[in-house]
Length: 234
Length: 234
Image (cartoon, rainbow over all chains, first blue to last red; front, side):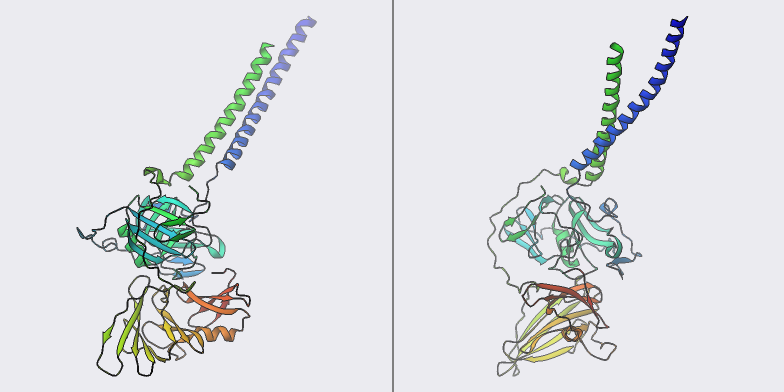
């Protein structure tokens, strides 16, 4: 009888232990999940943050708003109206007789942009690279072309919201070449990581460059083709 | 013994399951970060170093961008012998400021400033040998309402701001003198250059310290003429 009672008590105790045991296991499971997630993210973090923190994903598609108002550095700006029908110059057949690979070089030390087709220089102008966020040094390709989109980011006094950013060509994540209507301080760092150009220069480059055109961001560049890169990201 | 082994395996299963969920979350976050990096869509191209013929590099004053001028030489029959013109367009290309230089007798020249809106000079100055007037690369305000020029006279450098339509400012003056305003402001930093426009009505001033290193940056506000010290150096 006593043996039977002891066996019953053991059984009940075992049931209790099992419930607590599974609870502990679940806790261990969650802890291991958290540890793997945190450690994994630490080693797997992206090399650079987004250029435009608020529109990092959404600014990757064409977005035109001719009624919106822009803000930059605490100032209100009226963005240029974008008319898709007139945004680009109609291509003339046979106008481009130059052959060879197209290549865009950005010289961060002099804040200049050079565009070459083969051995022929197509463009040489001033740009404004990243001041609040560095422009990534490396060798990239234009992976997206948009006539215009919205870019927004920053916090507090340095927050910005810029609709109708014209002639955008992304070369690394949301880092791109584009026109800038909110400042005219080219030759000096003035962007959040992108490469700002005068609108006329941005249009000229946009119409010339193709998807896949190489873009090399150099710490310094000397003609004809000496691109010096320190710690390129790729 | 078997039960203990069973329980150990079960615990291990829970931990592995948790870790797997963690790994999945890490890879999910990575996918979200990289989904816009469509460089992968293109076959990586090696850094191409085309045999580009060296071009004559334009020499510019450090930090003071100037566009490659296109001199237009015309012979006139009057006493002034030659007329040269250099110009600078605005960012969107809709405005242009032109400096027309007339060579006089006795080694002097007269510089006349025009815009596309004006037929009579907005500003005219007779210069001695060694003196000049420059129109910087960033001359135009982003909204094309104002532009500035740089007088390099024997008495020193002056930055003069004009309205594009040729109208005088509200105080009746035909131009604003940035360098005079900065001198009156009384900052200890030495005026170095006006780099360009931070906004529609703000010119960026860079200064230097007595040891030659970079000093603070300032904004010059138009039309009020106020000088605003900045936390950032441009």
